Length: 495
Image (cartoon, rainbow, N blue to C red; front, side, top):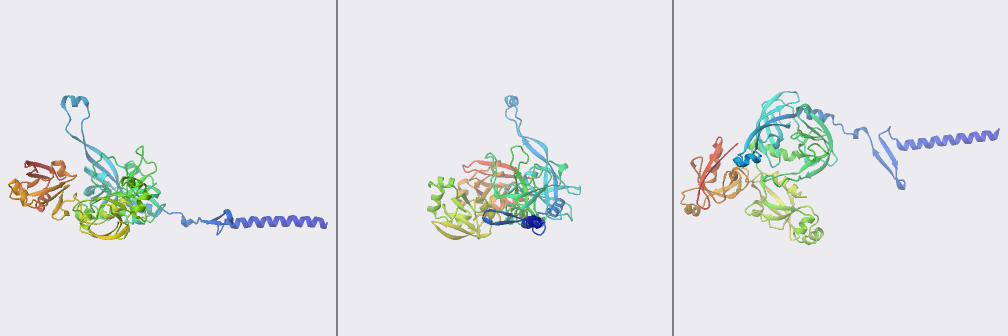
């Protein structure tokens, strides 16, 4: 009997020990219910992962707030085309450009309760009619306040008050892996107010472009996300989990034309500056540094005939590969006037480190012509700080480009010197010192010509040209003398 008791006791103790062991494992795996899980790893180190409910993102507030401030934009636009028919060309030659009305749609974000709405430039380009439908199904006609092709941002307005808005966030504070929402109208009216979620996949992205595209300037530092975005989402909101606008959805990368995992948004810190200028001035007042730059890459090292990027870094005494190499300094530009030289490496602007060319573009874009900044460069292995006064871009009429020179539809103008006037037997006129992309080039302007009349009024200084053109309701007509002494007449529409 005693032996049976001993055997029973042994079995009982074994069961109790097994239960205690199981309980110990259970305690190791659960703390405070089920919000923490511990898993044994090698060398007896325990790694704890917090799975508390508060760590899962609650996107309901952001979604419900954003959907009220995102609108559906429907556009009627004029599209230019040519007849592509070999029989037509055989009998009649190349056809003159034809025009037709096309329909399109996109999204927009209300940023002020009095009807100001941000969207993409490509949504409203060449629009003859724009209508906006709110989330409450009310529809309004909209007018274009201004556009900026360089950043693909446009500002439109409807006549309404008390509208729901999205507050601006700070896109510079976005972190990789942070949750964001994309809100818009993919595929048109029936899917307006669609909300998708994703994370910030990358920052500072640039896009590859067709070299045939005629775009004089592109400022790109996109936020890349994996939130689903499709045609129709353009101009819609990218929102953080607190309900702040952090970007304007703009593009996707796809071989099919539909979402395939990659979407891109213009950071709201770029949008804020563009929108502010369009409201205050009607156009973007863009500062220009006046340099040609390259990222510090293996490709640059080869172009500069170094053995490798490491060899370049060592010989140029670079502490890192952050910054941009200055390959050219535009004569008379901001950098040239400040004393920049070819071969300098730009490291920082007003204390902010410049990792690459995209960062430089975005930072410079935040300034206005006439603003001052301190730029840190590396020259011959030594850092130095240079004060720069930013000049303006030739795409903004009336902007001072250099001393005595003013921008006018892609050209730069200055008062014609006496020797030039004497050469052509003129009493006064305005000299075209350079011709870039814009309406003047398209109309027939050439470098070195002297403008004598604008809309039949004599001009003697650049401001005369600006004032007359500004007062014109629809068209600007220019009369002058080319650099080889021939008479020149041409005109263009302001719209």
